[in-house]
Image (cartoon, rainbow, N blue to C red; front, side, top):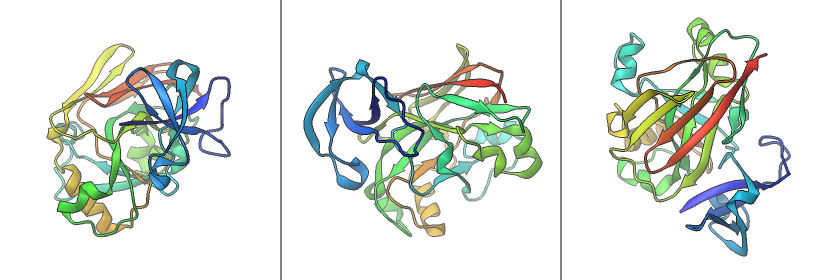
Length: 264
């Protein structure tokens, strides 16, 4: 099923702060079956209300209460384009939960940076508190999958590594929903910039697969319900210009579109 987080038309809550969004399950007829509570923490509990999809604004399907863990250099063609060496184990870093925005939201170009890049990624949403997850139990801790854009201030990343260049507000678009039935395999992952295909790969091209990633990360840190893991990007990363529209798509999972602001 596809879990959406949404706001009724005309109501625009602040991103992840003080908002009162609703959760629902998207039906086949493009209606939303409204849920009681947070489905990750409270389970899937429809309250009997239904609203048409066109009457709501979709938000980021999850705002992690704890963290976003990212995996770098996880596609061989991306490693090559970066002039790097294929890592022996997953390379991980964090993005703050305040970087999350939803479909249709604006990516803000910070005044500190001269170059803002897109990075198409598959994201995993964690369902429960877990530590040292065995490879064969990884599916037990996955709530579902969504589409992500690991927006990067590339000049700052080159200057000082993953921190500031990855962590600005609005630098982690997620959406449009969480699919609890999605099974990663040979699906295509793509990015389209202003209508031009700029990234194209397959999920099977990951150097480290989902079980390996979750097993590894959970040995380093405890994962909590609603935590999000970004699993890396294929080759083709590049800069966006002011007012660019970027769409990230994962075959069978959905499309996530955002626009970059003018430079701050």
